[in-house]
Amino acid sequence: MGAAGQLIVKRYRLVRALGQGSMGIVWEGHDTLLDRAVAVRQVLLPPELREGRRAELAQRLAREARQAERLRHPHIAAVHDVAEEDGTTYIVMELVRSRSLDGVVASEGPLAPERAAAIARNVLSALTYAHASGVRHGDVRPANILIGHDGRVLLADFGTGALAADPAFGRSGPERSPAHGNPVSATRGASAFLAPERSGGAAPTAASDLWSLGATLHLALTARPPGTAPQDVPGPLGTVMRGLLAKEPRRRLSPEAAEHALAELQVAAPVPASPAGRSRTRLIAGIAAAVLVAGAVGGWAILRPGSGTAVSRTPLAATASPSASPSPAPSKKPAKPLKLKSYRSPAGWRASAPSAWTRRPTDSGIRWYDPRSGAQLTVEVIAQAGTDPLKELSDGQVSLRPTMTAYRKIRLKETPSKYGTAADWEFTWTQRRSQAYLAKGVTYHQYRRIIATESTTSVLTWTTTADQWDRLRPTLVKSLSLFTPPAIG
Image 1 (cartoon, rainbow, N blue to C red):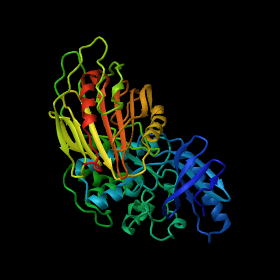
Image 2: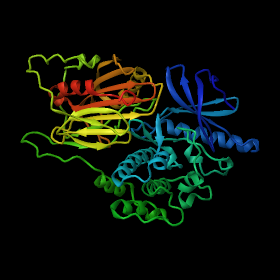
Image 3: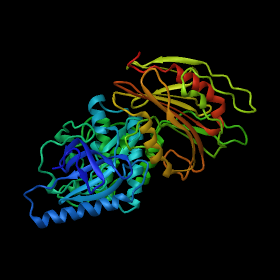
Image 4: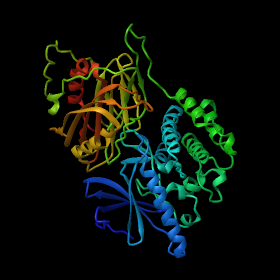
């Protein structure tokens, strides 16, 4: 049994236990070599197993985890390393500050169809990528789908999921969510989301992963797993769910058909008519394809223009203080801030956004967007104390850069705040390749601020295409200065 403070293979230090499940204990850890937060799964094999059986399972775990190490996808919580210490296997993964989909449904009830469709599409994109790489998950279920505190969606436990149906891991007591340590009911454990053909311990297949996705979608929409009599869900999303839950693998909905159907269901902002000679800009409600999961929080809403734009070279240098005024862009007439409208959240925080923009809820807050320009502001507030804003943003930079090209950091530093500790991160990037919600060759400009009080963490994220940045910059400065976290409100 591991212990807080223990150093694994002279590199990974166990910090604190996050939760315990049928396959062992999940720890928050620290990679002393790369100086970053990680999650460490300590795999505990039943002590009554014969030595040969223990060796077989350990080898399978190592093999599956090594395969999972190759996966780098925006909706996959990555596996970093596999280590062995004193006969115990440790799997080192990205640390995700999040809630499981299981927990979200338990606290909020069934999800709205458009939200469930967006989550399912993100998970499907992760599975499609993994299957194309020759990797099967084997344990797709709500407890392994993580909704980041910034709203991003990640499929976790690649590397261990393939063994979920093995009888050796079905002997323990109530499973506990790694994110919170709360007991997971038996009806939401691994067995409730295993495809029928895997009930006898058969190896996972691409088709069985799709069935598990359908079962997960069933819980998201009805607050319970499908069981032997799936609940009828009307409408197109119900058709997708039933197609994935077909008993015979060969009759299940194909990934391509499921993706097409979910894309049609996903809510997008209205698209204005395009002026001649210009590409249209469409706002997609979704999650960043460049995943920031190493303990980071922060809103991340994506704009998806049809072509790249020139990078703005004007930093928001004057926003270190909320009362500061921006310097005008060189050789340009300073833009005037848009008219703002105040909004008070039921949770107690206050924000101001352009009055003409459309407001919609997110997992942890509110998103405002402009259908004409595609620009948007996201404010998300979570009940999380002890956040180090600068560290969270710095960790995010390390995680984000491999997924993009032409990344340019404009600022990453602490900023004064009368509410607590705060930090700002401003940067531009160009998407390296087309993925879900991201278009190849498109340039974006984003400004993110994290404010940590004694009891909450607030994340304000302003995203535009690069050519809209200078025009909207004064509005951003004014909006940031008017934000009030709940502890103050």
